[in-house]
Image (tube, rainbow, N blue to C red; front, side, top):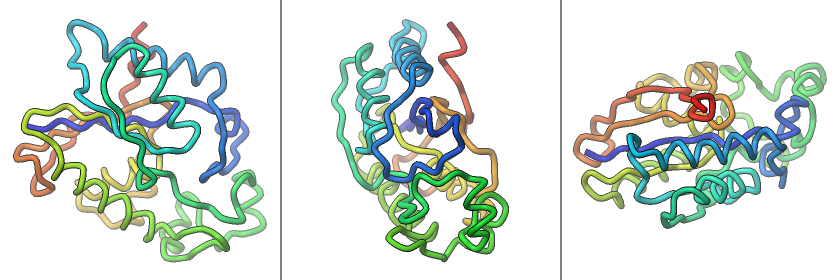
Length: 211
């Protein structure tokens, strides 16, 4: 059975400020670096299975998270654009409150149910994000070995989309379901190594709180 862990990046200053990050080159803050370092130490414990390899989004905050995790576990990593967060185009860098007040048609939170197919100028829709993430998810499983343990370092949006796909709920529902917190992971078991019958073991696990 293949096991996949979907890990959200560590905390950033923009997370605390409530700003839309998209593809912006935002670095982790001090707390985010501590979270990522502690997560690496968690995966290196004797009673924890160490990932065989890491696949990571190539954005700044995920790359930094990945390198801090890998400082404790020496495993190969591949950076892929497909695991990036949604490209927010002209809305990148704006606060959540600004977007909600000035651009309600953009679709955030519960309003995403009515805006999943809308594309911000210079960006991509949630439907486009879903297509690229699920395509990459299926490719990840196809390339995985039996009994392999794969860590995917990514963002909140892609994690919600994969979990919604496994639960077989509409995209709109997946976007308003439980959002992963920074440096938490979701564990998924894939019995036959394909997308036929994966199961969610646990979500929003925060290993850095164990220390």
